[in-house]
Image 1 (tube, rainbow, N blue to C red):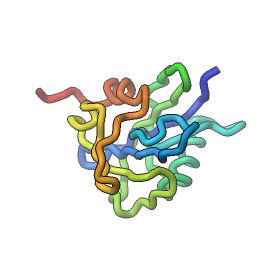
Image 2 (spheres, helix red, strand yellow):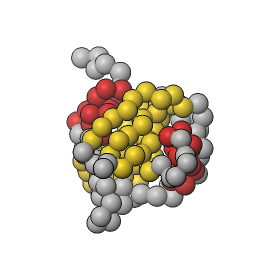
Image 3 (cartoon, one colour):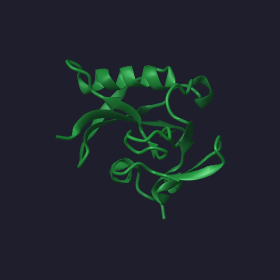
Length: 141
């Protein structure tokens, strides 16, 4: 049975907040870029879980979040929320993961994101490209 998670697609100035996951064997997508969020705990709604995860991962509880998509992947069932990142990136504290970045649609669609902190380009977590493709605004080209 797949895990149930809640994920946030947070936008600021036409760019989306992404997390470079830790290089830890056994976690989903080690060393890959994904959306902030995580597993639902017993008795939590997806939105409650997401707000808790955002506090745990970046020290910010989120503004208005709108449920947009239920995404089925072999390893997880993701409740995906969209919202505005109402604070500058510099106000967030990265408490989980190796790096975070605000990333434009073109780079997201490429399937790989450059980490300024590591000086490396890393791929997206499996399944995240499908979520992004469904929720990003249409490509202007």
